[in-house]
Length: 378
View 1 (cartoon, rainbow, N blue to C red):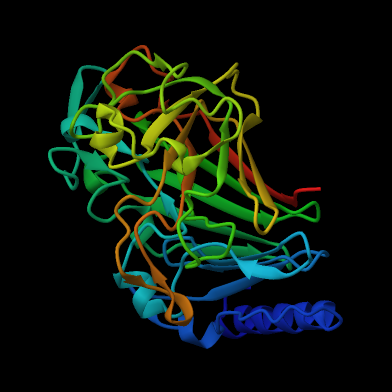
View 2: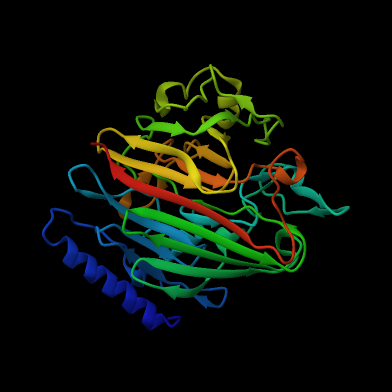
């Protein structure tokens, strides 16, 4: 299934299949065109793969950066909208807003000073976010070509070999990313990795969500619940200060659902440092098994998105740096018009012994799972 013709045919057939499924509804899904995602980057062909499930949900993925470019889910009336930011062609997807819908690695979030030490050896990573290393460096996994290993109507498996020394990381790291659109309306992400030398790994999926529909206003009217009694305060460069802080009595208390906009503009040093929410929450009762992390609710549409993960942290980013970004169908993504709920290990874990370890050794297998489950309010 690696040829251009085979994958193009799959995308077209999936689109026709979806069209037949939806012909008796009022939905008019404005799907991205596969031909707009055909190019050659770094000597490899880019593709757009369209996934569907039996309920008519649709997700479109490009192998450039393993990016999710569209995701159509229904509201309480059964009307479908695209709820993620993205672009309508490969040129924009490869040159603008690198993190939209992308896979992030080798290390999601920040490493202080771009330095860490393993077995008495200090490694210097690429510095690309002030004085720090962020989201894999100057050319992280969001900006590389992934190989398409297998596709079905509802899933795609992508792979990438991150070579020893890439962005300063030790070891040849073989990574697999599997996206599945399940028949119980879950967008499931599975990252697996192995290495031939001790290294650090922290991978995440970086879709920007708006449950009203991408480009349809701020997400401050969404309700957010996070299964966390504490969060990680940050310094002015967004590096965790160390010990988690209890959320009780702070604007970071989302133990029960609260409007994102309720306290986002409060006079609070932490909110000022992130220009809103841009913090990692310490998930309750973490034991390495997949568990409930939180939910997002949009009252007008009735859409609900629950999040599950086997990771210890949920990083909440409220689109505080979005500004006049032109996306699909002439949409403009503005300040706080999307939210990221990134399942991951803690920022700067390699330099914080008390944080869950991000170390991966030869003979071990890294596995990270995130599930975004869609439903509606009753």
